[in-house]
Image 1 (tube, one colour):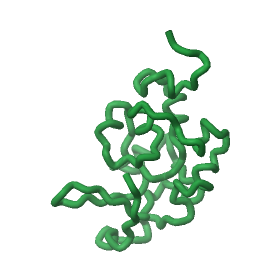
Image 2 (cartoon, rainbow, N blue to C red):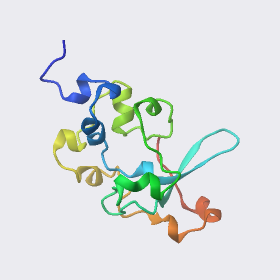
Image 3 (spheres, helix red, strand yellow):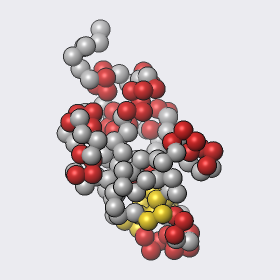
Length: 149
């Protein structure tokens, strides 16, 4: 029997969540929408500060979420099955935390009620990104950032 006093992310697995619950887990950090580079020798994934053309660099939300898969062919639609396989998801990612059986952090909007808390906590890249429209792929290495994954 489920405990009605627990928030949905503590009582359900990712696969058990409704679409609305699943979508609400996103904290709006924007890290999924940054271009990443993979070291061909050891497979390490590095984040860049280069944002998808659809990422609003202030809110860290997709500017055309319903149509993103049509507009950006390599956009990834995250699913419960993928979460455990994508080792580049940041350690702060709610999808990753729930999959690992962990609780959401105090700054997460579902916990504190403030969707801007992710920015105030320094988790997001708000104000620190550049659009991929403004940098050639050959120069991506010049925009690597350190993020603990």
